[in-house]
Image (cartoon, rainbow, N blue to C red; front, top):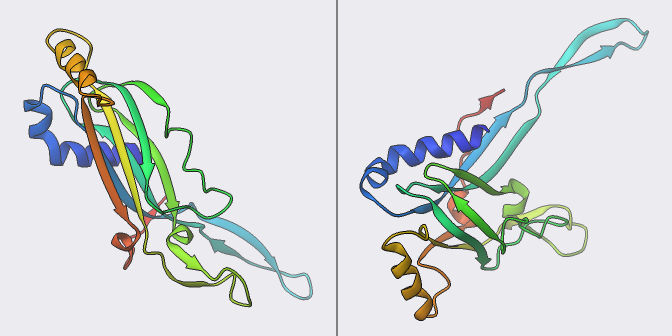
Length: 196
């Protein structure tokens, strides 16, 4: 997966000291804006009299924002639960952000990346609810998506004591990462195109 590789590369570039010095799991969320062009496709053409014309070369473009969860810590994370809050919703029929949210993931090894979701460009625009301009974007959304990641360290050694202590404090897990995505943060110019 190309997106996971680039996320891990970024994570290791940013957090190499964390990986070396942290003897606990550290889960971080990375976002990336994609501006991809697919492989060239030849579309045959013919003139009015049926004579062949040179084929039309076309590339399909794909612009979106991807969100990836990466364990940049030195040990594995266990009992990972990812939940969301905020008013951001994707366009119909994709309002549901996916099946990775709200369930428990047994573990994430150091360096492991998990693709969470993608937001298309049209998910970042607001549309008029009805009328002649219902299909046209009327501006940018001003909404937030908040992602909470609750997780524990391994149930071994001294960490068992810390896990019990967090349960007595009525906390869901030992550690929590909170990531806030605002739709206006990705507005503006797209990054350079990547060609397949």
